[in-house]
Image (cartoon, rainbow, N blue to C red; front, side, top):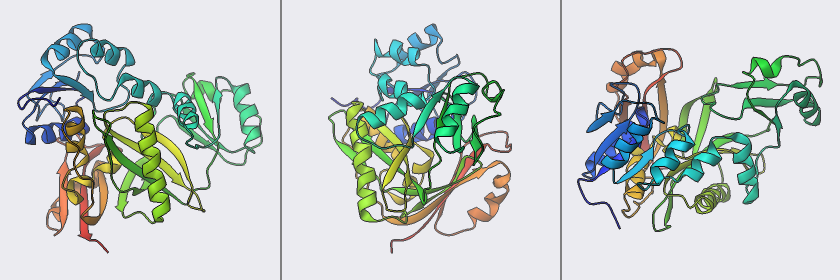
Length: 358
């Protein structure tokens, strides 16, 4: 059963993704309540209500549950206990199980491998001795990452062709937290699929985007990706398999490495709307943000068809200086996030250039 017009959707997290969800919700005549500890956050600027409190504050969670017909979230590091607590009183989409899988890179890779989706090889790492042994199995190369909380390239260290030894203090330097060592992948390109699953189990997947990262941060997403139709279909099928295995409701982002033969290795999943899906605002009738609201509200999913070729580019830090020139361009959609302070590495907005499909 779908939510009645005028119902309130709760969102945990007040960043730009929550802001864009609030815009989409308003277009469908839903109200938004945001739980976010930072006042005047980007989402709260457009929401009907903000609860200013920590994400795991019991009183705030009770207030959010009482105010909302359904609760969702805009980032994957929501405390699992908070999602589970809310789910006892109000539907929470995506389900807490999706958070549990996505919050730990070892859990995530074991989950993906368990449903038949290949990933890079990996070893859990808890100390320098384990790191030394694991690097030896990978020929001295690999990517060491924190198992939890890393994003935009943070919490990572790359090893290339190093002898397996002399790494004393590495784990401590990484924060003394549980780590994962992943094998280096000789990929040709990176792609991602944005897909949605409704309450009724229906699935809609957007075309894969080809992504370029610099310093661990997404810079551009290009449609169409330079991949064959078989690779595109395989990426969509993998996303659909993940959605079904998690009994998922809402939008998910799944990142892949494309190998020379066109085969795929899943890199990671994000149980939320995703930066590499921002292009859907400009190139599709139903954006990923509206698709997510439709899914969690029990509405029919929209058509994910792409009507334009396009390139989405993030505006990071001083890229905001480009805004006047961008506004003068034809066939360009600009979206700014309402952040007061621009600083290096901070996503301030994005734009999408569209062109006729080739």
